Image (cartoon, rainbow over all chains, first blue to last red; front, side, top):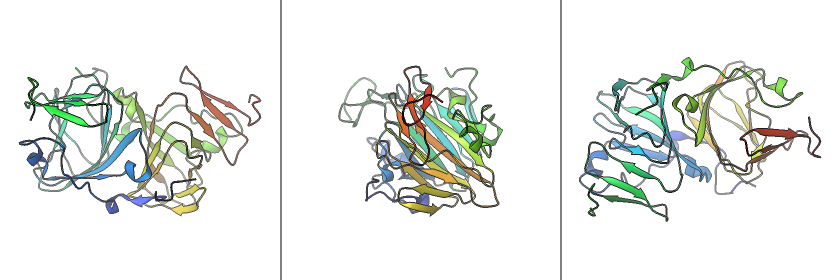
Length: 160
Length: 160
């Protein structure tokens, strides 16, 4: 039987936004104020991967530019034209475009909304344990601990 | 570095369709003729989960109604109004709606296009090993073997 608390289906834009806008330490968390994530997979009790419906206001960014060691990521653009930044440079995206970020490449990625319109996209990431994230443009490092919680430090290991 | 064979981003509808329309044995494979899957995650070398851009012509079905033991699934409707069939009955979907199918519930799911218009959706599924699938409405059982290949049998174990 389906969990009675899980809906059969939902309109993604009706899903509740995440209450905390970012788990980054400052000064990075404040950079995420133009970003709103609606967790979708969690609504249905999914545990192997997460799916967010994410909205970037003008000037918003999807995340600090980062790369995962173990977890794959995938995005699909629903509205607007964000700029994807990777080691290869900048790529302007449009609705119907998608990109994937394979774990372990070290190639950091980030979406930036440089337009005056809202950007909306789906983002998928798995929950592989033992993950870590590197941030080529910022003094930040992250490790997923055994409780499933991200621990952020400076690149030299000092706590934030 | 990104694999030089991987694109940075693609328009999903430009991705190549899967050449084989179904891996089911007959008579089930023929039921999938109105279904076209474009694998997206594979384009970027993702291995932890797969993402397909899937199109159902009028009369098409997403799959036989089925449930996975280990792998979660998620769908997001891009175009059209398919009918989602689960143990709870039928739910009419629309663009912007999503649903998740948690592993291990035994609650079979399937999308059916009963309209005269095309249905397009994204489907996400992880690649957890040791998976199996049950088919409440058909004489079929499936086990994911250690090579990552699905092996289909009758429910009593006889080969197809």
